[in-house]
Amino acid sequence: MPVAMPVERVLVRTEDVVAALVGARAYREGIELSFYLYVRPGSDHSAFSSFHGYPGGDKDQFLIGVEFSDGRTATNIDRWRLDDGADTAILMGGGGGSSEGISVTAYYLTPLPPPGPLTVIAAWPAAGIAEQRVELDTEAFRRAAEGAEVLWPADTGAKSREVPRVVPDFAPGGWFERAVN
Image (cartoon, rainbow, N blue to C red; front, side, top):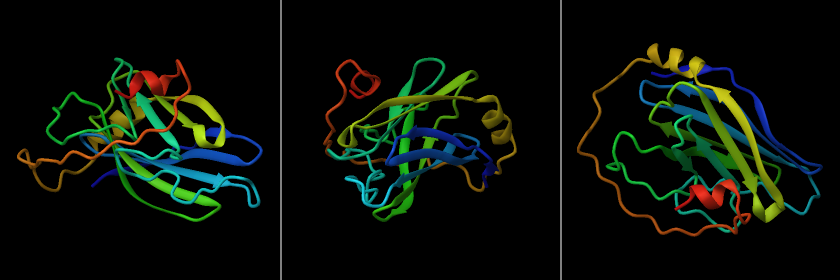
């Protein structure tokens, strides 16, 4: 069972769009991050299906990325496999929902970030929103993870399948262009 954590950070704010990290849950092996995207009614953009929540991406996708203090990166459009190894940073899409004005999603980040800052990067190229960054201190996540209850042992034999990749147009020289292989 995870430990719920109060985290509220605005990632992006424009005239028509606000994106925020609005909560987290710490597990022994990682953290779940909850994101909200709000779009002003009548604007040229829609929050509907903006996060997509699966690796492979979409040309109009709202981009979320993380960078560990040791330089490892993960994004919501990475192609990953469950058997990539314990040291590979993975950001897995989870549940969510959306309408024209709001999109909500959760991503599970594994492994648990090492000590030091965790940088969260957000961008929405389709809406003209450049990369924005916020830093989180991982100490609170690491302390909370110690209190998480393991319900069952991990299934070390789990395999995953390849997912085709469709990527948005990244800002030249930006963080996402470097982080996405």
